[in-house]
Image (cartoon, rainbow, N blue to C red; front, side, top):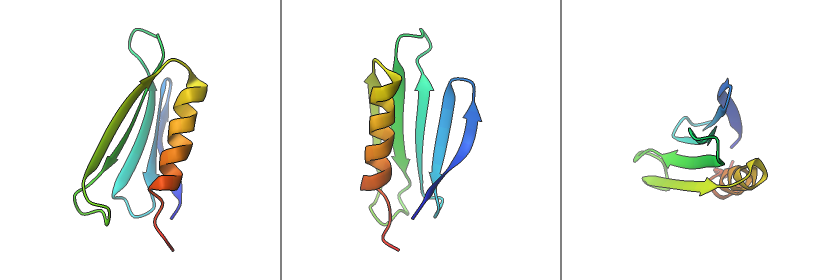
Length: 77
């Protein structure tokens, strides 16, 4: 399944999985010192409820989490 951008605003991007049961969010920290990346899967998702949150120093590191999670939590078509 594919991910699409659901929200793109200054300092925050959120992707939603095609089935609507998972989101990934990347945002700049409030103090401007790095990024927060989180994935949230609803209980109804085939994988079950999952929530992970990571704080990283660079946007590159945040993008690596986004890419990893989009691959790890992609549904088989």
